[in-house]
Length: 194
Image 1: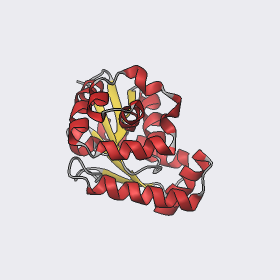
Image 2 (image 1 turned 135 degrees about the vertical axis):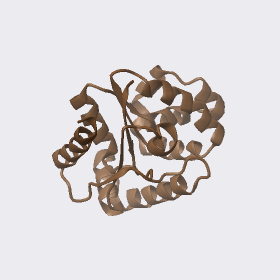
Image 3 (image 1 turned 90 degrees about the vertical axis):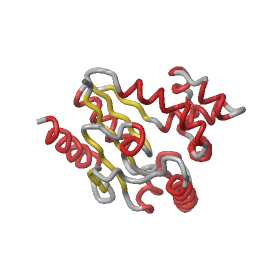
Image 4 (image 1 turned 30 degrees about the horizontal axis):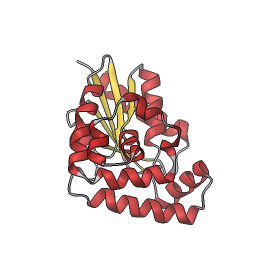
C-alpha cells in the first residue's frame, strides 16, 4: 500500500516547496493539485469539459504559474462538477508506489482523508503576499489583496473548502527559513513512518 502525504494550505504558504522536498527526500511521486485547476482554467471554454479532458501533458504549460492562472483556478475550483472530474485523476495519482505527496486545498479533507501524514502549511497574509510578489515580480499590496480574495473564495466555497483536516499537523512558516520548514516536515513524516 502506498504511503500518502497530504499537504494543504493557502497560496504562497510554502506547501509546494515542502511537498517537492518531501517527495525528493522519500523518493515519492509529487502532484501539485493546484496545477490541475490552473490547467483546466487555462484550457478555456467550458470548465467542466476542460476538466474531463485534462491529461498529464496539460500540466506542463509554461503559463500555469501566473497570477491570472491562479485566479482562474480559484474561480473554477468552486464548480462542483469541475472538482468531481478531477477527483479521479488525484485518486489514481495517490495510489502510486512507493508513495505520493499531494499538495493543494482539500487533500487531507476530501481527496486523501486516510493519508498517513497530513500537514496544513500556513503563514501570515503579509509574508505570503511578499513571497508571491517576489516570485511574480508584482506589487506586494496588490498581491495581498489578491491572496485575501482568493483565501475568502477558497474557504467559503460549498464544495471542498480550504480548511485543515481535524488530524492535520499545523506548520506555520511565517518565521521559518525554507530548510527549517522542510526539516520539520521530514521529522513529522519520520515520526509516522517509524
